[in-house]
Image 1 (tube, rainbow, N blue to C red):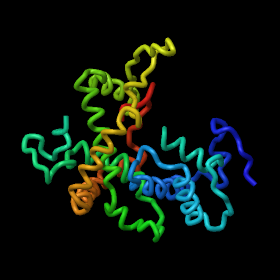
Image 2 (cartoon, rainbow, N blue to C red):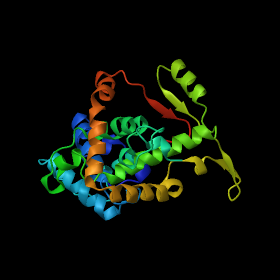
Image 3 (cartoon, rainbow, N blue to C red):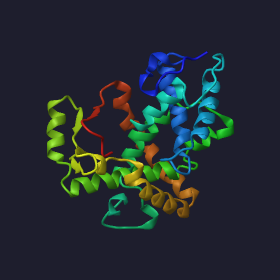
Length: 258
């Protein structure tokens, strides 16, 4: 029987299985894939996530008896991990075309590095149509989230909330590790400074995410599939540094705008 702790007290040592390559490369990849096709990727009902986690756990670890609850180590640790202008979306910003939207280099590279690299090891769960999902089925939500992330970054750079030269200089001095420090404003209610208005969160960007998703739904499943296919074509060169252990990493002093 699992010992229930306070959420903040859980760590990987509390998991019912080892936090090894199977946990990271298969279990986490698979649940990330499931999350990416949910209608509202920001707000997933607790009960739905519990069921999805149980299904994934039973498939990845069939010999390990474990009952999933929202207070247990698996749920809490996964939940922690999940928390941890529009021309720029075009493949060619100088030649805007509805059929080429969501195909900019920014979008495809983000889809590849932040999403495809996180689901490539997903295990096959037939009732989820995992193979079809990996090929691009029902990916409106994850493309929408990437679109919002790119918009978020472009706005911050345009408004000079992020100094690109400063970020690049920091990377050069820190072995490729990216440091991003968000500005702070005074919270009149608490009297303390906060980066809340600049964080990438549901309260700041939930509405835009749903708007992008609606746009993608109207374009149809073939368009979504082709967008994921375009990202897959860029996956090998982007993923090789991660495989070889040479990719740069990112550390955030407050909360990342991306």
